[in-house]
Amino acid sequence: MARPVQLAPGSLALVLSRLEAPKAAGVAEEPGGHAVFRAFRRANARCFWNSRLARAASRLAFQGWLRRGVLLVHAPPASLQVLRDAWGRRALRPPRGFRIRAVGDVFPVQMNPIAQSQFIPLAEVLCGAISDMNAAQTVVTQESLLEHLMKHYPGIAIPSQDILYTTLGTLIKERKIYHTGEGYFIVTPQTYFITNTTPQDSKRVHANESHVIPARITYLDTEPGI
Image 1 (tube, rainbow, N blue to C red):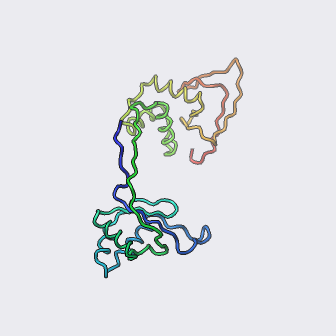
Image 2: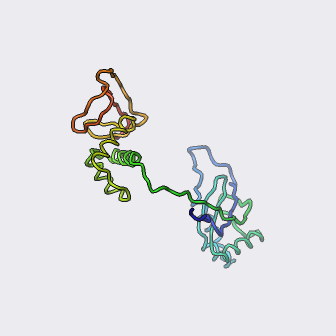
Image 3: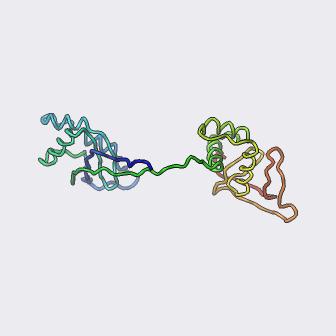
């Protein structure tokens, strides 16, 4: 089992609140975490009368931004202590447009990594590859699909022609992909199926890409760019 990983070690949390309510939606956007961090660092780095605080602020690094206005910052231990002292003396300056409601140490968050198996389902890989090729407007044939796998999935064993043929046929039956004269495509919520089958002709074979699929199925894809 993988060892636990400590996240955000040696960090301070600054709980902020805006001085004014944000304007109506569409007029002004809420500043992102990086913008708030830069404003905070700039405000304290300009405290030229307090060289220790200015120097400590210049060494700050952005650690994270939590909803409801919590800014996480990281710095060498000595610099963090300067910020603690400045807050205690009410000398720590807030980022413009905010006030600092609280400052405190953040205990490291422990993450237990989830192990991955070395087995990658071929069907999942093929669907992902076909989706990527569709998005790139690359014609997906069995040959181009194999080339894509060799180029973009170097860690997997390239399937044989028979295995590829069988897996693609299964994906078509499961209506996860479909095939037209222009190649293979991913079935999306915008893909319509018009089916008219009879017991006598419930199966047929496509020329060139000869997969067994339900007969008389029409695929109409309205997805832009497909």
